[in-house]
Image 1 (cartoon, rainbow, N blue to C red):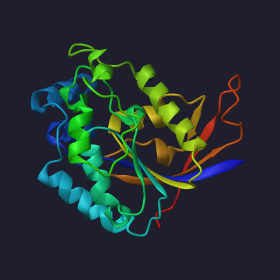
Image 2: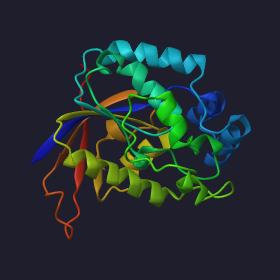
Image 3: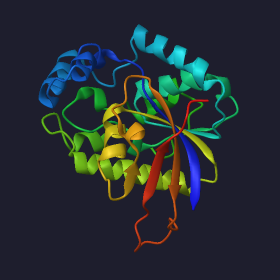
Length: 235
């Protein structure tokens, strides 16, 4: 049995979360949730002042954590959250941006990322080798009227875990999005087995530490890797 410690962090509040997030928590339909986000969004929404405050608060909790690698979505609100929450280690711990960690593509402008040139200028310390230049072709492959399927998002989430499993670091932080984490923890139960605590819906800027375990070698193409995610007590 192989294992790693993973710190999952959803980004802090952004503009499209201000009304939609409380409505979803209160039990509104997914369609209403999407509608509220579409009314309040813009391309690659930044954190709100509340989102910055949330991340600053979580930073106090994260001060005792010792990630050896930080993996982050290419959307600005996730990168800013990572920089705030793990600022205590940002000068010594590498931060790698992964396309697979982004929010569900299409339909929602808040899921469309900035150009690579913009991101490199704004976040010069981040490793963007996984991000292609030019237009956001992944988002545009779905377009403004089509939301990426849950199945496709789940596949990206699974591929993200495969990437984590291939890394040599034993403690890794992953900063991403509510939709991505939902598909990570509920979308592929035959490949990603989660306990009840891990699979609950993530709130803005929630930090959740899990133990990720697996038995199959990651480089065996004909045998899919089954991951177990188990919520760990707060430090």
